Image 1: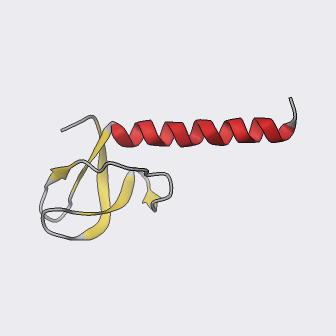
Image 2: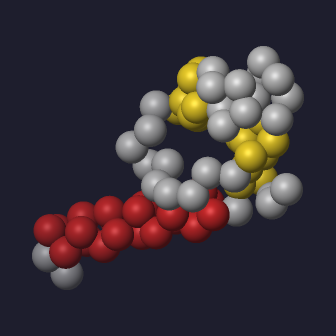
Image 3: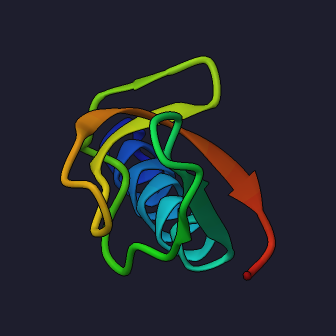
Length: 72
């Protein structure tokens, strides 16, 4: 297989993995403790050791939130 095809397939797999993981997770706000779902792509959002930068729908704080596997 050509090297370009392998790279394209790898990128497609990374994107699909990111999409399905984002559908199976929820976040917890460190300020107010609210648990909430975020629909969408997490691949391009800033992240750091299991935390993602999100905005809390309850208190409006935008910071790195703890990401939990599983739905609420």
